Image (cartoon, rainbow, N blue to C red; front, side, top):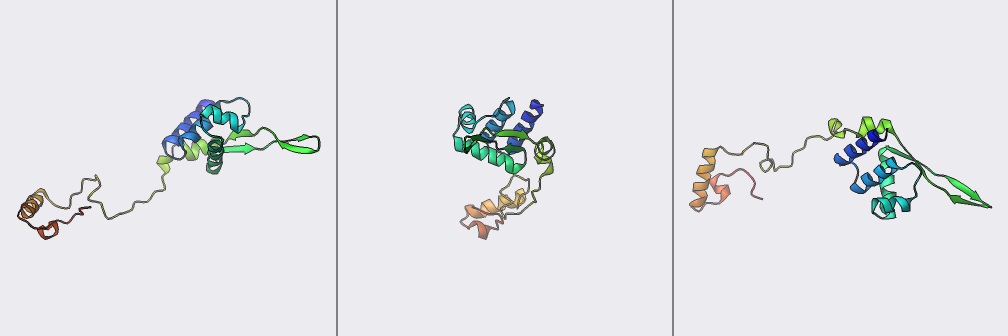
Length: 151
């Protein structure tokens, strides 16, 4: 069971949905047998207590981790006890384990398509030769007929 959780956490990290610190903290939580405090998690992950809190908050927002708060009564006062953590396997396996296969990204155009490595060229090789000759003769690229962007 923990290997499936660890694999899903690593895949979620590789897909860029959680940070490196969040990955480390979640892997430590997945391996631990008893609930750990923020301080002990921070020490094990070699980060700050605030980073641990942010990592757990990030995992809760993604829906892959559920935290339960325990309160202890000491005399007349209530105090915070250990937090309990539970991974949501359905969210890990269905939604996040392979997010790149369910990408919601829409194609967009930025106006600099000739700069991208997509195989499209604004001119044929013969046109480039003529443009280079005109530029060498003293014309500006625009006067020489260059249609791409120079920035």
